[in-house]
Length: 154
Image 1: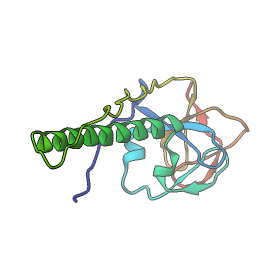
Image 2: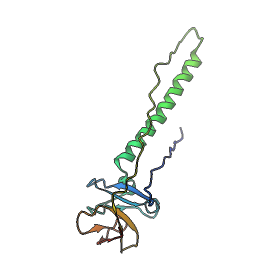
Image 3: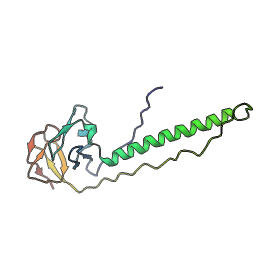
Image 4: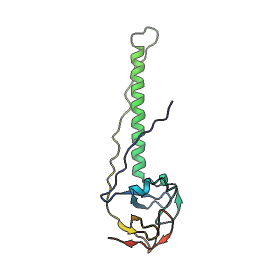
């Protein structure tokens, strides 16, 4: 059986930033969609704790929940279709009978709403911008890991 790819979009805020969540400290920050999708970024650093891992580990809990719901709906739809096909193929046969039960439920995926409650910082190490809620005086650059004092562009 061939692999199936299910695509869905992750919303950006009005400035083109996507919310990310550190898998270590669980804090949220934002980077531009183009920076996150850049295939040259093999790892991201958390701007708060500085720990590093693969970019796909920074999806928010809401995005993971939406992806899971979409996958569940996809498989529920496939199973419902398979059961209907089985029932149809055994209809009228005297030797074996198959009756389809209740359909698997299809649930609407969670709607993700992007808030704009963070400050914008220009990172002098690479000139990129992120949005964060400054906890200390310092942030780490998500792209190079450098310890920087971002210029706040409020």
